[in-house]
Length: 302
Image (cartoon, rainbow, N blue to C red; front, side, top):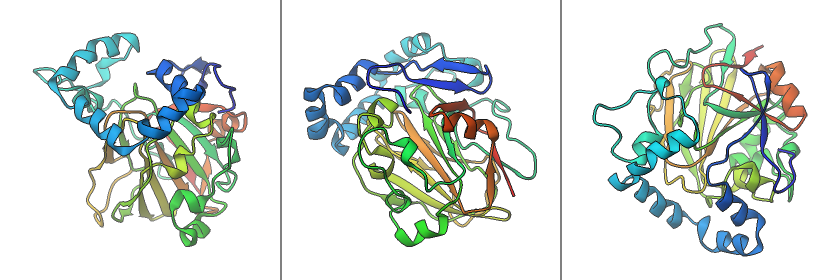
């Protein structure tokens, strides 16, 4: 996330093996809200408030919102062969937004020691999660204690590996468990709803540690305790969990969905438990996210 304002947002594509430029949904609005003085005032006064996202989300649940779907698919060249399409079509944009995949569209890495990515998106990895300064381009760096909302829990994860998985509005918007284990109940951490786009973060938004988010602790056989955080964002009215607390889950099992908007999943490991994939670490060290899909390996259990 090292670009300067008004430059393109670039990422490395794991499959194409090259740097790509991101097609940003609502780019004009984002740049106005975070790079223009009047836009920043409007954003602070209204756009980042929960009521704005709730109203926007309500509109995205209406039948009228479904008219936006064909243009969205065409503009962003979505590969709809991967997704299940209801017989009568989608009844709203939100229904389309959380569209399920066809069986087998996201194979889960079967290696016994693999840890898999929880979502489709652009990923930033740290071998040592205490070094979060690379995610902050302008403004004050945040700490694990701020991110987790719990200083004592942060001590347990200090110096552990960490992966930030950023979803764009064009991505598959369900999130999954990176390992098999026993999840506790999700705990809600209150906050505003700033954008999680690099456009916003490099302008100083503290979205990852300050936005409304949900924290789940997953007890795993090999990797110990894992912290799973879903971060809400502008125009994301709800984070919906779909798992049953205190019930064992498989690696790659669905954990929940984000309703409309781009958002983020953060996965944190205890120190010395997991080694991150080399390509994620290499590109992250260069300040560049890596695009990869849910179910692919993010690392392995030590």
